[in-house]
Image 1 (cartoon, rainbow, N blue to C red):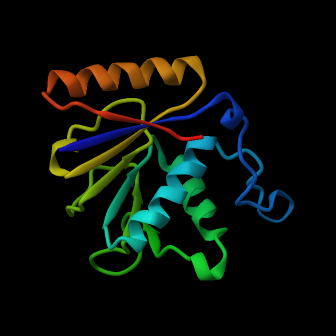
Image 2: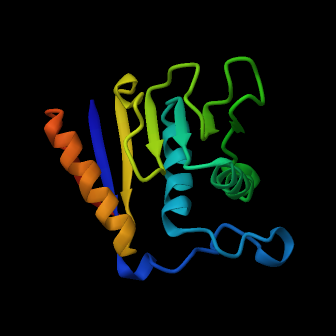
Length: 157
């Protein structure tokens, strides 16, 4: 299992509107790590990977779904919320529930490590700037180390 922690900088602290048109879509306050997660999903899709983006709740999943819809047509990322779309799902599936199918990559947007994380070859985590989220990320990092995995840290500047 490969685990990567993307460390956000202070410059990325403010919610992003880069991918959203706030007046048209109401997406004015997208957390920076959600925007980064969407960009990583686009890269993973283009690399032929099947990805599960795991969210804390349905509201976060729906927000991420909306952000992905904001991509330009030429950068479109096929995705769906869990339970929607084709039988095996789109290449990028967004969920807040335990997945029924397996995929190669888990993008974890929750405060803890999901119990099913060991089913994935690659796990992507985030270290947001907010102190509470940073503390949660440190705990996850320690937990991976206890499992014998040495996570890689990447500065997401």
